[in-house]
Length: 525
Image (cartoon, rainbow, N blue to C red; front, side):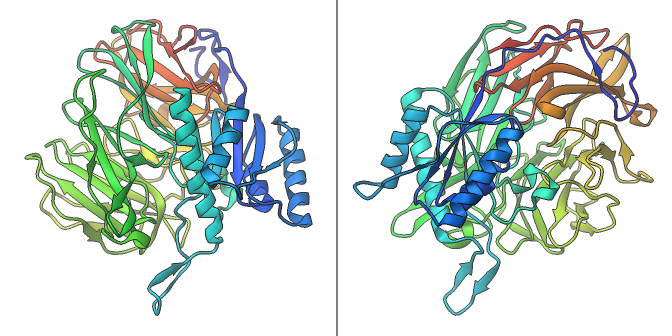
């Protein structure tokens, strides 16, 4: 690194040349032009093609034209006039698949296929939603078409699902149905690295051929159920990789439910375990199960696994697996209503804590328990307000990192701290992640990674446990689509990864395992 720049400043690192950047081509698929306009408004720097299922009214079409014009001013490029798909002579999925074959997008932007309700009709026993049901139906058709297209292409197709009720003043992440995937770069017991990312057709994996090698193979589509395009990657105390997501499970005569699903990788490059359904807090209920929030998962130091979700009533439910492998039933954490943002952490004492962004206020609720068999305690006095989609576990045990709601600056907090600790770098969006134990001339450092302005990958470093002494921030080049990732392997080598606009990961390594923070040139996998 070039040296300490102070909080909020970024100095340019000369150690990592930027990878070749391809254009990120996105297909915006919507029921009508008004919905497409809202989706286009979240794009920046992309080549955009718009597909609608119906023509819509004059005002809707004008709104879409304005949105495309504004996107051009943000650096986007329009791929022709919006197209209206004719699905009268066949299924909508087939018609959309034909459009995807023509456009060859890297990514889709669609509505939330399973939106949360705004009220409940007790008489009919049905949830009431603010957006028309047609939007969800089109989103599911688009997902089906994208899955079929990806299987034909044998290349990843990524999907953003966006809520219709998001407050874009809080950043584009506030509208995401599924959180940004963090921790997607991991190391195995044999020293090789793996990268896992969610796509339209399921989880894809890239695998390093040999420890430290620049050769990788992939993308490899991992067999599984009909997974929604989100992923949670967690390591257990033994270093094995566990994957969590949401899958559509067909029930004979009862439609589809959306279940929490789990699989594990015990050997680098080998097949996953079968995906196991954990069901959800509203099992066997087609309507209520669809609204389950995305799971957060964490292990305690004894090997116990905890999975938390936001349930249909907007509170928290959790399921626990003991170190003996036995699962307990879903339980309810009574208390505050929460949004989808959940962050689960393991404390220095080996216990588990949960942080959740409140639904009806700008604050955060924390649940903890002093021991495995103790009752959960709710703490509403957590002294910070995070931007949506930014809250994650920090690199040190028991810490949480988030972007401040007002300033967007990354901050660090832990129970007992007098106040949140600003870390600098108020540019960029999305979560900040990191690793600890990075050796620098015999001293232990924590290394952070985040996106910055124009989605550049930026790293920060501070003496482990002493973020109050200041963070050194430096750009390392490379434009990241989504959240960048970092891993410190068993040999002490640090590797950064981003997803390039061409749907391929790019990696760079710290040049020395024991001194400095210079990184090698980026290598596209």
